[in-house]
Image (cartoon, rainbow, N blue to C red; front, top):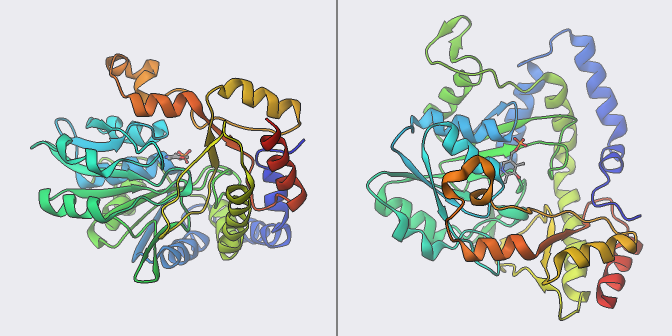
Length: 365
Ligand SMILES: *Cc1c(COP(=O)(O)O)cnc(C)c1O
């Protein structure tokens, strides 16, 4: 069986380092918001090219805390792609803001920048871009709109550690493409810990300080609560594991890219539609999505050939039971993507033989 994502094998690569770092935490007697956390925050900020990184409990909290820290709430609108993972949208509605759904581009699956301006109203406070499936959003038009209408740009970078946009040959990474960015370190992400974890990156000191207080009950100095905060901390074990794995992230992403390029060059079947990549962007292939008309049949066919797949995602947010008020909205591009999309195996630990088998089986479909 070719696994969709062999998490055991991914972490096994760094077994020695992880074991040692976990042991150090146990020995230290300090388990939350300590040295490991500070080190990781510093290293991850520097990796992203951002001035500040504030860790937190998970990716949803990272996004939720950014919106809370900006003080956006009831009556405020935030623009978000309609086909994102539901967490992006939950972070908005949790704060009482109204998510304004914008259709994606059918070729890239990222937000269609040409459809944003018509959705901007006097209540719009921010544009949330989602670097979906590991491909950074083309930011030029979004930066221009943010400037024109005085909006914040919030990045959902949960699937895009190390992805970015090449500007004059230099890579500007997710985490440094907006005013603030939320990351998840859920085990299956490109940089994953051994449980839940998340972080906010930003160049805005005031925002960083506020998120730092908010994640810890709203307190800046112990037992001085300046905000009504939450408890969303990254524990020292997870911070240590992330810090141990961070130096290998580029290598792991490069291996994903090799497999993706191999797929792009060799999958050749009229029934399979590949995603368009923007050339100037560095894609980290969090997943490798393809689209096909008879998706469920294709998934069964791959399963019969011992290839595990997943669907990101089967139901669009506006069709979910929790957002009943949107169930009748018509978002044809989003719905078409959800009807036809399927993710085939890609991971840093996949072998050439496995990738070859995936191609051979798909071309035979
Ligand atoms: C995983 C993910 C999140 C949420 O991260 P958690 O750590 O699971 O809370 C948010 N947005 C996107 C696009 C994601 O893929």
